Every structure is written in C-alpha cells, then in structure tokens.
Length: 263
Image 1 (cartoon, rainbow, N blue to C red):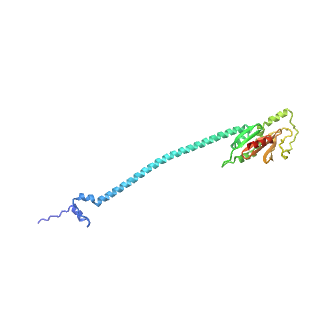
Image 2 (image 1 turned 60 degrees about the horizontal axis):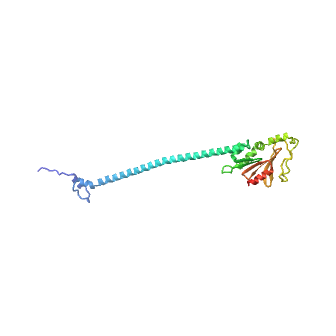
C-alpha cells in the first residue's frame, strides 16, 4: 500500500502552536489576522508614530510662533529704542538751544562770565543798575548754586570787568573827568558806614579807578551776607537771596529792596 504523506496547512501549523486557552482557527488565515497579536502590535506602533508626529507638528507650530513673535518683538524694541534716542536728541537740542539763549542773554550783561555761568543760570535780567540772575534748581547730579558760587570766586577779575561793562562805569568815569569832578588825590580807606549799619554809599568822593583796582570785602547787614567794593564812582555790591537768586547792584538800598521784592 502506497504511503500517503500528511499535508499540513498553514492553518494546522497555527493551531498546533496556539495556547491552551485559545480557540482553534476556523474560517481561514484572513479571519485570524484580523484579531491576532501581530495586528494589535502594528496598530499600537502606528498610534505611537502618529503621536510623535503630532508632537513634532505642535513643536514646529510653537517654534514658528516663537520665531515670528521674536521677530516682531525685535522690531518693536528697535522702534522703541529709536524713539527714545530721538527724544533724548530732541531734549539735548532743546537744552542746547535753551543754554544758547541764556548764554546770549547773559553775554549782553556779563560778556566774559557768560560762557562759564550759563549752564547754572535759567534767567538773566538787568534793570538800570540792578542785575538779577536766577540759578537753576539743583537736581540729583548737579548743585548749580555751589557750582556758580565757586565759579564766581575763581573768576573775580572777569566779574570786575563785567560789572564795569554792565553799569557803564568807564563811561561814567570819562564823563566825570570831562566835568573835572574826579578827585585824583583821594585815597579809599574802607567804609565805616556799613559798620554802623546805615544805608549810606561807600563813596564820599569820586576817584578814577579801573576794574583791576577793585577790592571786595565780605559784609553782613540785617542778617544778610554780601560782598562790596569801591569802584571809584560807584559802590558795587553783590549777594545771594537764598540759593535761587544773585543780585548785582550799585547801592545798598537797591540790594535790600531787590531782595525784599524777590521774597
């Protein structure tokens, strides 16, 4: 009798290798593949891939938003910086213009002192023989009163020259020479009237002098400190009203009246 080999199908192979708790295959391989662990594994791997791709897409979108946002932030910041620089440039221009105007005003009164004191002064006014300078208010970095005070002390020769110019003392001396009203033999001995606290002038006789001859004296009267000098034909006085005003004049009466008007 001829040997007939047993033919194993793919279905038989799968049934032989199934677990004890698994039902036998029926309905073919196609039916099995739909519920197999292999298909579940493939489906799980596919889901993971989709999640990764979704995550990458979200990162890409966020990165795109960040890049676009950073670009526009940079543009905005550059615009703000440009605006700030423009404001500072305009402020400097206005300040320079203001300082230039103040310097021009001061130079009409005190031409030699003007370049040095204009940064500390906000207004300069002359009315007859009275000059009033308004000192700028101090800020965090600058004490304008102290700087002005120190500058005047260091430039007394320029102050003397400018006071002769402002009060036209040279012209007055020339006119008195013409009228023979100058006493060329008079010697100034100081002023006793201030010690007696009166309002009399220094000058008892007119004498010829130049601004180089001025000698300033520190004086106190009615609790006010000031400096005074004999200019030969006029008394020169200057002092401070607080830290805001500086008064230059040619008599004690003018000095005290001006201080009273400023208070």
